[in-house]
Structures are given as C-alpha cells and as structure tokens.
Image 1 (cartoon, helix red, strand yellow):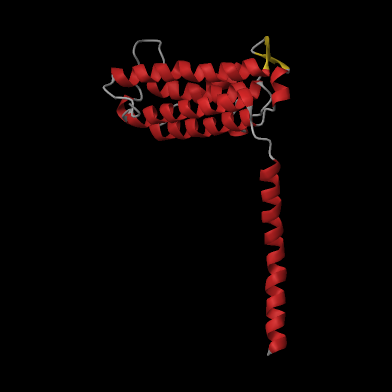
Image 2 (cartoon, helix red, strand yellow):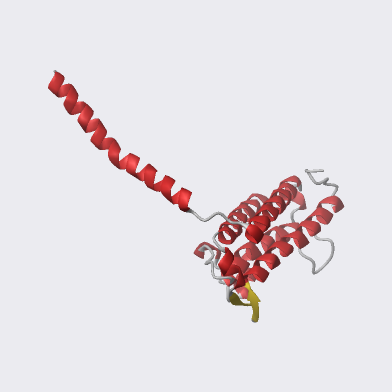
Length: 194
C-alpha cells in the first residue's frame, strides 16, 4: 500500500514538472520584457486615454447613426471609426511592425489602409476592429526601445525618425477624437466621460 502511494505521488510530481517549468519560463520572460520609459511611456498613456474616449463614443452613438455624416464627401461615423482603426495598423506597419495579415494593410502601401477602412461593417464590427487596432498600436509602440526612436524610417515617401512617426500616430488619434466628439454632439450624444 505504501509503495503504491509513493508511486502515485511520484507520478503526480513528474506530471506537474512540465507545467511548473512553463510557468517559470513565462514569469522569466515577463520579468525580462523591456518596459517602455520616457516618451514611449508617455505616448502609451496618452493613447490609452484616447482609446477609452473613442471607444466610449463609438459605443454611445446609436447604430442607426453610424451612417450619419455631416455633409457630402465627409466621412460617416462608421468611416471615422474604421479610418482610425486602419491608421492604427498602417502607421506601425510603416515603422516596421507588420500588421495582422487579415487586415490586408501593408506599411508601404497606403491604398491597403484605404481598402480596409472602406469596408462596410456593422457598429459591432467597427468597434471590434477599433479595439484590435488599439491593441496593435500599443503593442508596437511598447516594443520600440528608446534607442530605436532616433532611427530614420521612410514613411509615406518621406524620411522621419521613429519618434516622429509615433508622435504622428498619437496626434492623428486626437484629431479624430475631436471629430467624433463633434459627430456625437451633432447627434445628441453626450460624451460618456463628462
């Protein structure tokens, strides 16, 4: 009986070893991951604030208003949401972070972003795309180390530093946050944060 008990204990311990090893490896990788500092950290915090506000607005605007536009030739609510999502993929891709192949967006081809944003989607699909795109832009920025920020890159046919590219990505988000606030208020929707 005692021998059988020892055998069961030994078997349980041996079965658990790979699981413990995997957990230890994940903890080690997470501990050694470079945490953003300086400008990248500040931009990530700012992008997080814009993300909460844009998603809050997109959720607050009724689905029947997602096709609303302030005038002919101006983006609709849905098109603004999809435009923000497309550029959240395009700008990092232009900086060397490949976008999810499912998006079809290539950093060197602006037309791929235009095709992405022109898709007809439901409100739920647009919000889901916006959420995924924010995760991608934040992951890409977090993976940019401080020494990389001075690296020169070609983007949209011009030379930039990666720092300039990330600042452009952030200011672009603020531009469209202001647009979405105006769209919401034009449709009787008060921004949910104030």
